[in-house]
Amino acid sequence: MDNRSDLRLLASLDRALDVYGESMKQVIYSNLETMFGVKRESIIDNPEKFVETLDKIFGSGSGAIKKTILVHMEELTQNPEGVSSTELSNALRDASPDKARNASLKK
Image (tube, rainbow, N blue to C red; front, side, top):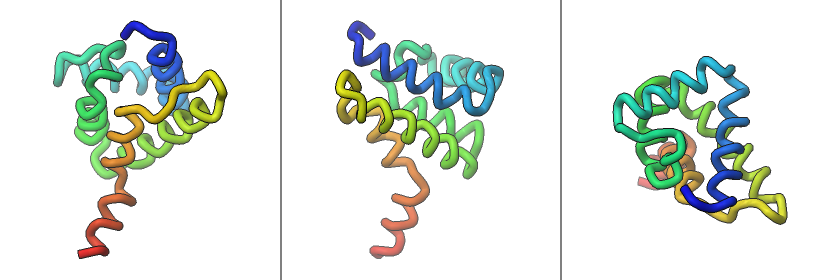
């Protein structure tokens, strides 16, 4: 992580996870590192591992957390200094239960 946009994105992610409490945020980051060797600072480079961590910890309940994160990230992108579309937001959207449900309805 080496640019301001990445820092802003991680700060937005932290704020989103703060909704669930500091200890829950630390549990998520700790599990991410334990299960995949990915530190918080490397989430931008490993969004799929972050999403997989949420799924492993919360199962079907991970959808609510992903949605909270997306809302915070979208607020960030509304800001003129914000981050444009990122791999993390795409990974979260790709893993959303709504997308899976819509895909199954198209079959």
